[in-house]
Image (cartoon, rainbow, N blue to C red):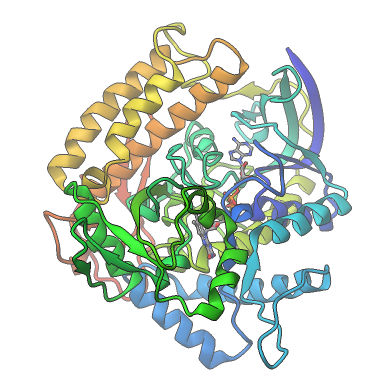
Length: 534
Ligand SMILES: Cc1cc2nc3c(=O)[nH]c(=O)nc-3n(C[C@H](O)[C@H](O)[C@H](O)COP(=O)(O)OP(=O)(O)OC[C@H]3O[C@@H](n4cnc5c(N)ncnc54)[C@H](O)[C@@H]3O)c2cc1C
């Protein structure tokens, strides 16, 4: 039974920064817009829960050129200059608009505003307000679980359950749909990320969408062992030691993560102390990231003077760079009528093989949201209203083909966690390890297609999320097998060197049968490669 049915020109799925910018831009283009979020737009998702540095650069050709060159190197040669330049321009323009909407940027000692950083809670509070003032109808706590298509196979909206209205069904019929459902953090518990379960990727893949860069999905953030906050800022001021108090020297934050993760993977506890933080900065650190300190305070630990054990919390594709492949400047996916913005889309064009957090992903969310919203409004204008004969396309976890029962979302999540969360499987990859995990995940997928379903609204949502996690694990590890080298965050312990012939972006897709291919569009300057992906 559908107990909420709406029509709109543009439907935006997800209300993080990417979805908010998309909704605002689509409405500015004259479209009627509905935005549906799994949580509460303004507090849900990765950006809302912390600070965000942004790739906000002055209009200085030299500065921008240098930033692109730096990214090209750090990103393992997989970026694209045209896209990087577009993101720099658009982010600059839109962040300046944000200032006009009343966002108060901090000022430096000369009184100049620092617009390259945003406080997540305040940023997203303002964005929600702007979305609403743009006339967008916001559906909070309305996760989308499946896409609708018309008789011609064009995407025509989405549907899902109403979490706070008796778990009835909602459906929005729309001329164009923007996916902005974030990345996939596998329900790892990392701070603010449990809403990001990759549902959007799964819905798109059910209609044949291609993904790219899924091997770049192995970011783990460091948090206190009894916390889950992974913002890197704190660790810039950390010193580390082992259980005997022997110092562990680290040269940089990136190097620290790998070095310390190896110890933790080998079962050796690692401790941190933030005693390199200048005393005058300590209160500011507390003020900017209070959630980092909360569990430490509760345990009676002053992290500036006393060491505490750390752990590695998995962040999946949220601070990775892979996602749905973008096929044009308006962020169209390979499925007609479907656009993608933010972390649900690949960010390889901007940040390549290296972590997308730390300013690039946030800038991409703003820029891609803007372009996707604009293009979706234009697409909807060219299309007749869609009302009748729509097909709901959700399969695994929603409509098991051999009847539900016997397999719950919780069972599947547990099984996926065993293959995806351990550092020794996902961060330190080998062909043998990837193949072993794929055997398990492939079998799990078959089971999920046949039997995974929930018995009530809540468990049905979890079942669908669980299906998305299995799909992600299979895409990530298939792509990881093809990338027989170490590049950026993708570490292959059995292939520690970079292979120049693999300076190619790797596409992946499919559900029952997962396929891989090299992206026919090679990065500029890449060697032609005759090898075929596995
Ligand atoms: C610890 C950490 C630090 C970071 N630091 C930085 C930084 O300093 N600079 C930077 O640029 N980037 C940073 N990032 C990355 C940045 O937060 C993300 O790139 C950004 O939030 C992406 O925006 P988004 O809107 O795509 O996704 P999100 O902000 O994750 O929002 C996704 C939204 O989609 C909703 N959703 C999910 N599934 C569904 C569904 N099925 N139906 C409807 N809605 C759904 C969620 O509820 C959520 O509101 C960091 C990330 C992490 C984890």
